[in-house]
Image (cartoon, rainbow, N blue to C red; front, top):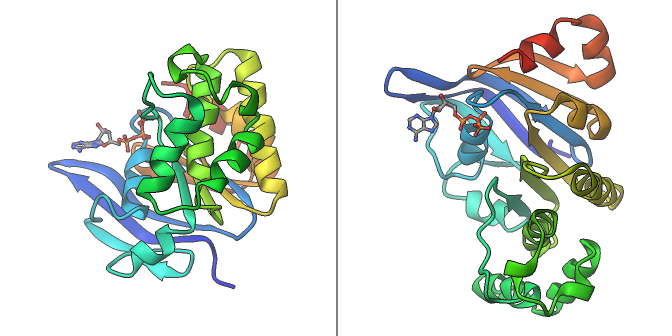
Length: 232
Ligand code: ATP
């Protein structure tokens, strides 16, 4: 089976700045893969290219075996995405927020109950989203990503801004999704988080890949990575 994500020498230039430079990574099906790097490292630009939102300056990429290009829309039906700042209608309740997305995406509305259950929000589903804590909002955003029953889930900084308890909830949820056999691309600037959740990781800095591989091996081989990643 083809990998879930392949990028080959993928680059994106904005004016004089290389946001992503010659990025080559492979995410295998069923793994939790970490894309790690400080702010501005190029994680969001990489995601935007994989989703067909930003055209690469050069290089190639494929998602679930489909190269970037006109066919990508078909592969994207099996991809769930949680962006860094989720868009939530504050005056709609949790279930209604998801129903809007299900209708727009022509997804069976019965999926709404199922995804609320997966993220542990079913008891608050009838309450307005504006009453939700930050952690609940993040879980609602993950629920939205789960609506199409995705094979691949891309999570951009899913624990950003959460207190420790909220972080634990999200991490447990990611473990649960991985145990269901879904492939997860987890973007984060928190090394500790990817260490806990990911089998393999790619570390970006200023658009360039500075290391890739098994998390434990990388930390042993490259003692300076922690300092290099978190030193900004
Ligand atoms: P963050 O966690 O802060 O989102 P990131 O690792 O996701 O960081 P990117 O958002 O991909 O990094 O940004 C990479 C670089 O590209 C940064 O220097 C950023 O300023 C620049 N950049 C991103 N989008 C654009 C754009 N549309 N136009 C110009 N420069 C951009």
